[in-house]
Image (cartoon, rainbow, N blue to C red; front, side, top):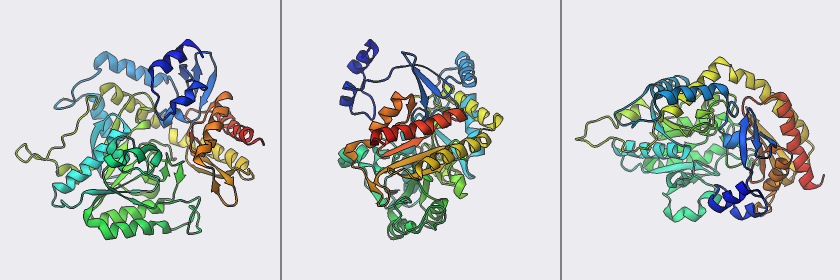
Length: 448
């Protein structure tokens, strides 16, 4: 263990970590990044196959984004966002409204994904309180949902690893059995089903709609649940149901927005517009903390008044609308447009799929390879026929992650799922390396 690792362990408490693990597996200290690779203080290279927690779109130390930061720093680093504004925020808001689904015309700024979700929940609740529906006070989320780790966001999540200890503090939320396409109880497959599992949502909402203000969902891919992918028809049915009962459809596109699923936003696959959309992560291509919550004009108008009515949305962050972060987001959108990123990713997505599908089809411990755009996931199982899961305590994914790191690939696990979410600058040779090393690491763990 070098001196930097010792100092790290002396002073830093890392997120989503059992710190005792660090006694024999100390943190890897990264010196620099370039493109799809990270380099530690010893010069070892790691292919960043998960885009550093899903945020990095155009590679580390991207020259265009670096220059955008330099230009903005020379002009304005920060300013209060109440009654003040600036060019980068105005440009970003205008451009985001132009590219998101129709009807999302107002943009509220915050500084991270959980905050965007908190904003969405509060807006939905307050809207109904101010529009003659005081009984609408509860939210609906689906099983295995993840929407962040602040208390409101945890309340609409459904992964005990994150929320169980805090349940006495959380708001009451309806939880509905959601899609589980790999273990479908209806004997269907995601490619051609009619979302028969939607009956659970339909039943609960129809029975309780008078007290439901919003339904929040991760469109098409449930990230922290293990990249569980479900079909667009589920979203279309949900949109119709929410419209029928005057319930807000809240699309949490924090992880899946900005091209991850093959379209700019996952909702586009279903051809639907939510009432509220949450964006973060790839928004600034991994450079700066920033999030956006988009709403319809109808929601915005419910808060539009003078101080005699006290209907304003009293929510703020010190770094709301930070000019540097907004300038980075604008440059990221420039790269999307000028480099035709979505078009180029089609071939990269196809290559990931072809390689992983071939290696997974006869593998005894890979139950399924599933993919949507640049998101791919390998679900590891005890038995391929029965789809029996490994016990959580065996930490199968974690051990494979450590083997892959030793081979120079960063493949952080989600329980028993190993996933791919590389930066868009990844080259074909890197994709081949990523997929091959993933399977080599799986085989090494199982002694194959």
